[in-house]
Length: 312
Image (tube, rainbow, N blue to C red):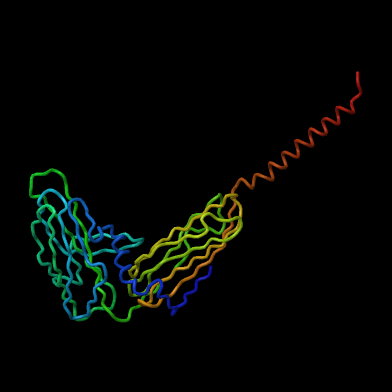
């Protein structure tokens, strides 16, 4: 296995000016919350589409738009919630605000009524700590509606978020290994994964590209993984699988993971492993051939013996 990390390569086409927008979009997908202007039940919530520059010791603000797309009046409450990120993109909202921003978030207004088809703009103020490490910080908000009119159907809470970008030097670092990917695979297919681990002190974003080359051709031969956010101390397992239509061959897996060092500069981790694929059926082929030859020889000898026997 080869593991090489090359820093300093510039790649503005992947992580240039789009990094900020992709950063928030990926987290929104991972959280499973509704993106801006998308409805969940009778409630829609729009929140900032890009990270918000937040310098230490300053107050920052942004707006969210809450809309009632249903037919009943809603009484809405907005509460700050801690965003909990874990392995493989598993996320949830905690029951309490983020301790790092306790008593630093003000929502105006935090409670209000919404008539059907009505919208309300909410302003969120965040007082940044005087001392805070450069990184991306995720603020979660739980928007909880209640129906004030007579109705029996349930209305789901909606999660919203904002990303604060505290500028400064950061220290992302990615390592990767193969897992559950055997050297010899018995069967017609191979399944395993590449485990990407964030071992630096800053949240990073990465993509992966895996090429499976060899004989006979693998299906699929190229496996691409979209961008993922990976906070420090967490890992993400990237599935790697393919089929060999003959159930026989050898393959080399080349996996490359690219992650951001800064908004404009990337680094990559490269892995390589050779795997032999063989279906157990091929072990039976020599036995079947030997049996077939044995039967032919037996029949041939039996026929020759009959010819040699004298007639009546």
